[in-house]
Length: 361
Image (cartoon, rainbow, N blue to C red; front, side):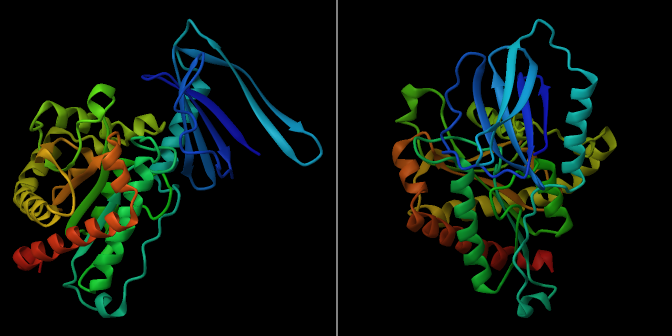
């Protein structure tokens, strides 16, 4: 077995990359730390590579690593010795390892997420709209955590149900940013949308509250569109949290995701043309989903989500509910509820292209 260990800063983390490993631990493992370990996350990260991200309570250094064989059955134990460190500077080896990891992801060396084949009846028609479904998080990035489930699994289940509903209609070509428990960087999700020339981008997430005294009160779904300034403080905090997904997984945004002044101006000009379409779909989705899903008090909001920064593609981000609320989590884990929500979103897609389809032809 090959493995690599390095540290990252802000927040302080120790990253362990291991070759050809599948995890069978419970989803809740790692939520409660001890000593220097605050929490840890684990999951698939890149092709043939798994990752454990250990968030530490203070800066540490990795004093030693050992791969120990246990008994005669081929079992092994990998040990890391973490000790407090007065120095917070990363070594050249650690910086090089982090850069190599990020470069591999940006070059496409991530866990493969194949899209279903295009039916011949739709493949021959250039007028079939392309819809990208983006189940958030995945792999080492679990997203929000509930009492039983985790965000990455819930949104993938809803994404699959939505993909089936849209594909069954025969009116659309559907592309998934991930089809399994895979980590996909935010910039790559946007690139998938650009490469397939998507005419609608739907990102699926589940919200959570850290404040326990409010967790049993705040619930309901919310639909977001892009805005440089958030519609409220809660929307701003949520966007900041979702935009930090790559950081928490030990990945980095490529320089491609940072726009200079000229590119930013061109982006804004194109984005104005699609902003109205995004708002239109948000309204249609809210109308169709109402009655099938519990909405928050103010369900139509806006914030500066990275995956919604798509100048040529109408895009929305749907928070399906609060996984921190017991009833919301129970519903989101229900296969019947997932199918009902997928059907409602499909109806909104039908409404959207019936009203705006001529624009895309």
